[in-house]
Image 1: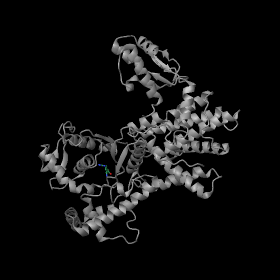
Image 2: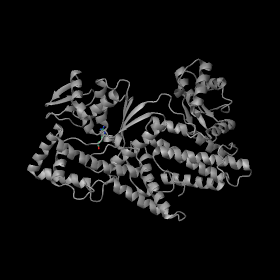
Image 3: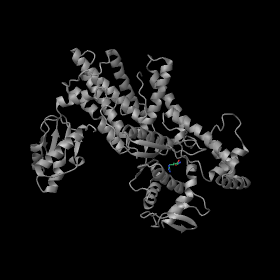
Image 4: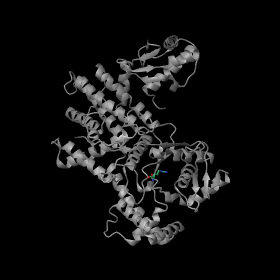
Length: 575
Ligand code: ARG
């Protein structure tokens, strides 16, 4: 059995009391327990107001009835009834102490894995072959990877798949161009974007080349060996570029996770057959389409999901139908998640509607985890001065260079250490900027803000962690397991924050919202620094008190390290 978190435990007690007091049964989630923002109050319960309305009784009376039947003395002081009928809870010192002591050597810091693990197919990163990754793919990679880590830590099985754009008509011209002009050096195509643009220019200006390209598409789809070999070369080349970026970013995707569009090619015809047999398709302008209910354009016309084009080819939507069917039926996924920019929200909504109609989502949770755009200082989608999309590799190199300046201010580190730390700080800053805001919103890419040492930044968290590590190094004996005492308000506040780690993880995981974990880690670092200002650690009055405070510092450090790791961000010991 999972150990309940503080708010869950409070909810359970309130539910029991309500049952005894008024013979009313509610689910624990309906007990409306929330962290209190008031000084001196830890949690509050907002149940009496809504319940009062429902029962037609004054809320304060409902609150009083709950309090009268509450069995809580081991956990909290008898709650005070405030305002219209809030219950204000203050946790007992003994309970806090024994809970923090229980965290002791637990590597999971009190967070138990899910009792009913799910099998989650998660589509993320998904860049396009023969093109450089851009900042949109950065967001998908960074957010997706944090979600993978969070879900795995929560005890679920995650099946990551990288839906590479590696198929379709552009490959005709790309293959022709590669055959015309094989790369000179052994390192292959230096710049994928230039390569793509050169092929496109030829396609637009050279009629003979365009014809050859179209014929090449037919050969590719027909499985011609030479064509496939050249295509494979392009895919391998691009994958090498992507892997470089993943490696630099600490993204966990490997070649095993590649399930590009081409993978689903053998499944496409059957998907169309099945949808036709189910009577879901219609012919429209020669194309086989499904018109899912409830999707219209501004003129009120129904919107189609095109399953087979007029020329017999299959496109993006058909591939996604086959993808959904594959992961649910062949791989037994209970959840289908897609970390893709919000501009594709309608595509996924229509996709899910069609899959549901086809019966492929029975008992399956499907969700599009959308995210906003990265904007430049001018508020427009980020581009280089020449107006091109910025290459991810350049951006990350710049991040590390800028972080070197930040790190160089500290001279105690050796040059090699400085380089390593600059990498962790620079990459961490880019990732954290991507993770720390509500993912659905656009955000402005701003070097100064993301590398600031104060505020909700990874640099601040990394410094906070390194500072704690230096205190612990000075403390000598790691003294893990020393009993914690919580006499001072700042000690108590820190302990309570540490105990909320599980709650923070749960809410970040269930909403696929890494920013909730960021906010929690920031609060933890701030609470620690207040504690450190008010409670001397190394020079505490007694050895027992010193050991207790060292233990609080140790737990804080471990919380920051684990939290950052679940976001995919490194925490160097020295900064
Ligand atoms: N390759 C696409 C792009 O760059 C993203 C693919 C997302 N995944 C999917 N199953 N549609 O826009």
